[in-house]
Length: 449
Picture (tube, rainbow, N blue to C red):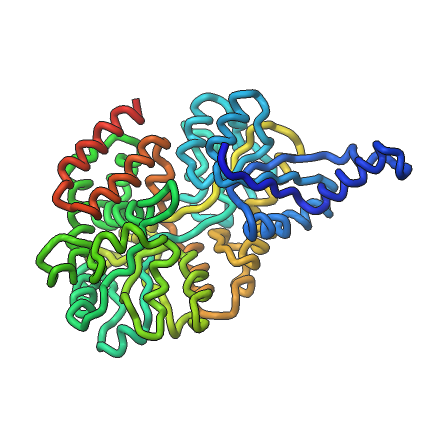
């Protein structure tokens, strides 16, 4: 089953201790064990599990419902085993909704369309956020934590010292990368190592390019397994990424990752959360990084205490053409997002109350105070740290009207794994693209059968 951390909330621990004392006759006991209980399985461990404890504490105090949480990094396997043996948790939070789709199609999830409280909280979200929880026309999940992925990070001083502006279009981003390479700075901070999920940062690149260059309709067909990996659009996305990352490698004329000394091997061996350390170093080792909103925490924790807005900042993923219009509506850019979605496996009153609470403004505000972002527009700006980067990230996520969930996380597990491996193979040898896409196409035929 792999490494697993069991994180029970403090109140539940206290109840168990009290129960043990009752059983041994040490103390006289009344009926505290009759409290309603809701069990939750999720990916949050360590600090994230502690944050969840603080988020649900007001709910427990107000409702008298005891929340029992189990956190594991191997949540997909644990959940599948629990469902198969008939002992699923009441609620489960997953970062890969593709697995929830399988459970929904098998009839294992509780429909949430008529759940009291959700209709009210839905009004605080852009419509696309609600759509993310639908499978086959039914609402089966809610997004309880979110991240914005369509971002390019940079050090303002690195660019300003070279009279460069943060890129707003793809051609501008290419020009900035070329200028950095000419000045001896690796254009891109690239880290693909991530234990059994190595390669996922590269999938984000391909996904953002497909979404920005070819649009949401093509993106949706690809995610749903209806578009071949060998199609012109998907092949074009891989080639576009390869061309950009080749800037600065072998003088910009050969294949590579634009990572300078070490080339592809550096990218393959660098942990995903360490790649940006060179971005905020006193002597910059790289100039740009494509990474999600949670990268802000890594930069802030780097040696020397980098200052947000001074030592690191972000721009939205550049468009391939000037935006048609600002704001919502036709022409508004679609943004890639990620996060944790929660579904109900056992329909109980306690589970209904908790899932509605977690989607609401109160819980979302507490998540933000724990360092997360929220797409809930009811969360006050004052909930974010009083520094510009965090506030702008929160506003960018909440204001995004057209969003799409991380493609690989919505794909079936075998397809997602093949995508990860394909990124590693492509970075190691871009010339193998045709064979890599053929392998991915075979994986699609099997995974969506």
